Length: 246
Image 1 (tube, rainbow, N blue to C red):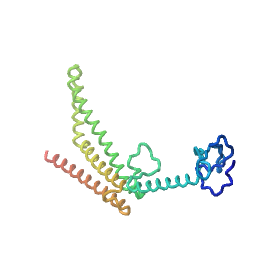
Image 2 (image 1 turned 120 degrees about the horizontal axis):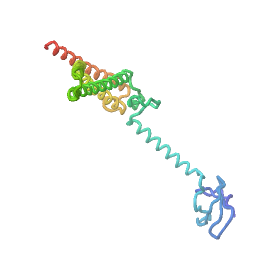
Image 3 (image 1 turned 180 degrees about the vertical axis):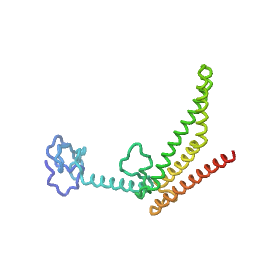
Image 4 (image 1 turned 45 degrees about the horizontal axis):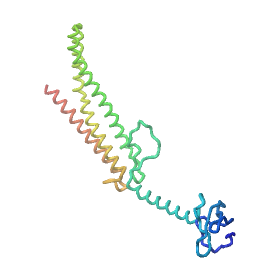
């Protein structure tokens, strides 16, 4: 018994077309769209076949409408959440590059040039000052500890004198160049710049307006740089006055 001629039936889950009865209540059928076989049973008041299961892989119009609705709904949620999420530049970067270089404003605005250059400069100077400070402090400790060791080991007198002289030279270099103070100052400025970049990336506070966010960030970074430079000049002048007083 075939039901292909009943064009007035509402569409079933798998658009069945009966082909062969296997029992009084069940018969084999095939999908009218994809032709795949399935098992149906009678039970509807008007005698239409009722599907036991949906044919795998058969996309009915009802299923297509539902999937389309889900896709559009997810796209709307993605668009709404993008406004409050920090975006990054999709261009690949070197692993050694700074982590904040790819940050963008939610309005797809890149970092200003002066912000990138200032941030890189402070990062380089911070690392250099830290290495120099640690090297000088370590050498002072080693040379100072080497003096009593040389005496206890009955080394020539010039060895102890040399170690003491080197320790004194390193102490003077630390006082003159003040690498530890530079390290602290650079670290503070670098941290402030990175904090402003993160705020810019999320578009919060004074960076909410996309038309003025980049200009405000550039201005803020220049203020941080000017303040750090002023502190450095003041420290140098104080060191010179102390040297003249002595």
